[in-house]
Length: 331
Image (cartoon, rainbow, N blue to C red; front, side, top):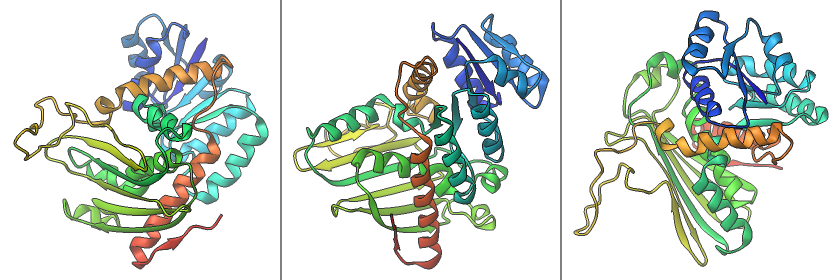
């Protein structure tokens, strides 16, 4: 099959490399607003890859298209793909606001064209194992979920200004994955945010450390946190406490965590430095699953409608920080 990629920056390049490792993918077509960049990336990927001149050519020539372009371009590009009948994997979010996303989701569902939203936690082997354990009833009923996601190093100021904020850029992955794991409706959100790392976050109306508490309809809770600086490395892990089990995702010999116990372990010199290292198996599996969806052989684990919830929760978190009050989630 032929898979097209629109946007060959850091994420697009990673996806192209992973697609190149799949036997099912015979050709990788690359488009970028900077044609010379697409040509350069194609040359580095080998015989499977070639650059195309424009987006229309990409849409018409490929069996599936992957969108790794800026968020503001997503709605138009998704619409072009579903009009062409081309299955899509779109990096999160589908759109920057609920006002944009809601009609887009309706159009996607009416089209019948598969659209996968790139929430990579849903493709992570350990997270999928946790999902199956919880859904099967093997783990009993959920009491509490705790999740943390900390960048090793703060991002550049120019990225922060255009990122959408810490809730929508970073914690939104937990706001997607944790309700998906728990399988219950979130009825209330309470959040708090601080600027502890760099005052430049406050200058653009953002926070560099946030905490959110979700209350589910059973009474179970999730406590989620995100931060822009962890001196030991990139730390992204989840702990699940249930009536019959306690288990963790993302806790291994590269997790940047020092134990002060006598028999505890010290942080590895090979601790994770970024999300691409930490979630390499997830990104590889994401491309395998997308190829299967394009071939009509796999189910979509991250449909467009699910991404509405994570954006609603992110906006509820922001409202809670601004008002200092919990936010009820209706419907």
